[in-house]
Amino acid sequence: MDWNEERTATLRKLWLEGLSASQVARQLGGVSRSAVIGKIHRLGITVRETPVRQRAVTVRVSRQAPRARANTPAQARPAARVQASVMEELTPTAGILDLSMHSCRWPIGNPDAGDFGFCGRETTSKRASYCPDHTQGAFRRFQSSADIDAWTRQSLPQERRVL
DNA sequence: CCCTGATTCGC
DNA sequence: GCGAATCAGG
Image (tube, rainbow, N blue to C red; front, side):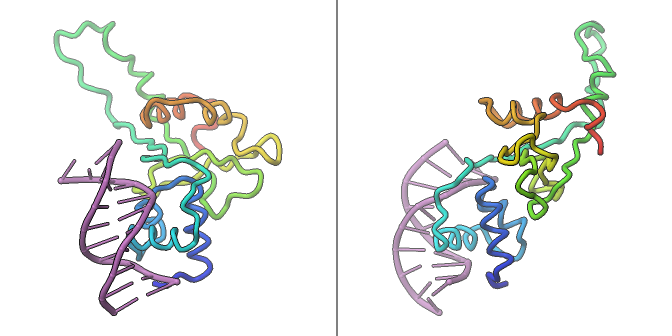
């Protein structure tokens, strides 16, 4: 595997989007994390535009509602329909190469699972990085990636959850 | 033990 | 230029 222009461009883009070196390596395929790090240094892009998202935004929800213990009062259990709505899959509309100047860059999915992508919906202004649905989450401070996941799941209108 | 990026240095 | 090995951490 050699660093042709296309692969180098992809590496640069993924890295600047905030993916970790190992995630970039897996997306590219055929290269190790070390190779990616070495290349990044040679390219002089060690300072990232976007901070590392250790797990990006992982949308992985169990398919089955938790089994309630026999003596647990019904009121203490999550309502079944709430569980169902949480199970809706969010679908990215764009891969890294599809992003245009006015595509929402909110990351969706798990880079390790191959379902990674970006929201990709239209941003309000040409220069914005995120669509209206994601701009609030983008500039908010989260404690953990789990919080980002939770926010992502509840932030979109129902009709947009499955495209 | 999982992971992160930084650095070195033989190739 | 490349990247495995190593280092220094979280």
